[in-house]
Image (cartoon, helix red, strand yellow):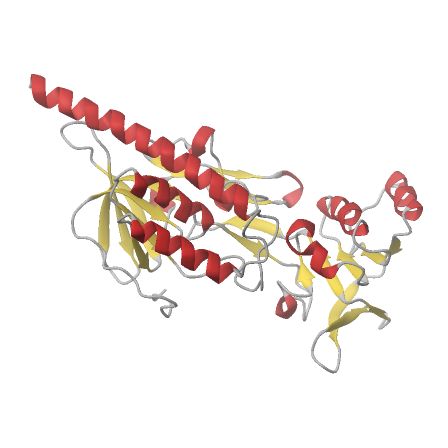
Length: 332
């Protein structure tokens, strides 16, 4: 894949080895880079320029920044990382892999971009985010991030009191129904072949949640192109202004196979993530992971906090490695 069209000016890729390469330029990656740069670590962020929340007009649920357009948050983040000497490089990672440790035992990794450029780093922070996989319903994807939403906390207030439909994808959709029922009195649950036990049906009825068993054929637009409802397989049209979908969430793994990071499948087909432990540590020495790539349900604030924690932990590990190298040099 070729590098995306530049939405901002990309920094030059350094030719010398750096302390940390951060793969992913979202909130987790940028906050991790900020912590490292403020600790006087040389850090490069590789940003594909394709954030998950690109379709959204505003980010919500994060104090102080609530209502800010996502591109503005990322712009400020890049500016702040650069203020402390960090570099932001726009590009796609084609390969990333460890190389033989140095004589002093310290680690090294090489990252190759799609255009052939390479970078060497002592440590790696993976913050690639995730990809939402929507149900294959014709017309659904074109409204994604606007009238088709997935998070009641990110978008719910903005669609309050609208006629909302839940397009069921599995057990998580039942939880979705309770949360979106808080936001509207007009909620329809389209089962789409998923099961509903008698207890859930009784609870739905108690909250006036209408259940439709007939499968969904397609999304219907109004004359102005906005979402107007769904057409069922019997050609009945159910008017809805908003559709809520619990997507399958998959960590973005492109170019990272060489790191051999362990992956985990979540139950009920919710998604696939990078496995991680405290502060984003992984089973691979020298590699950390933060944000939606490992915590699929994290919102912007939580992802940013995870990036900061991982960045601080990487700095501490590097400080210990620096001391070990100094000690070895003084006694060698």
